[in-house]
Length: 73
Image (cartoon, rainbow, N blue to C red; front, side, top):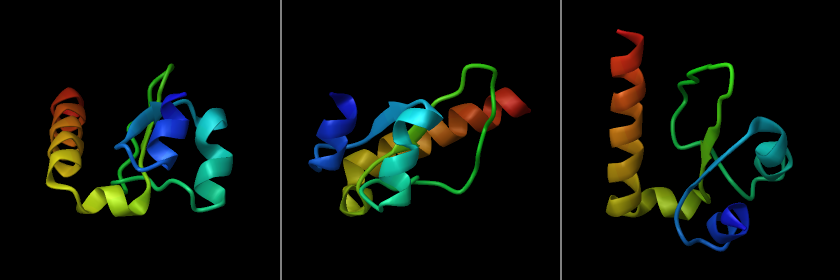
């Protein structure tokens, strides 16, 4: 359901690799940043490309990326 909302342009989603792989391959969703932070139980942050132009979406993306970077330090 969350992936359907993201595909519809409602914002972003966090999803497991197998759940988002086809959507990424078909271009329905994109990863908002190039970095990959791997964990035993990792999730992917994905959104439709136009959502990345929304300041509110990018604020969450930037915040999450900062949190991941802090965890690696």
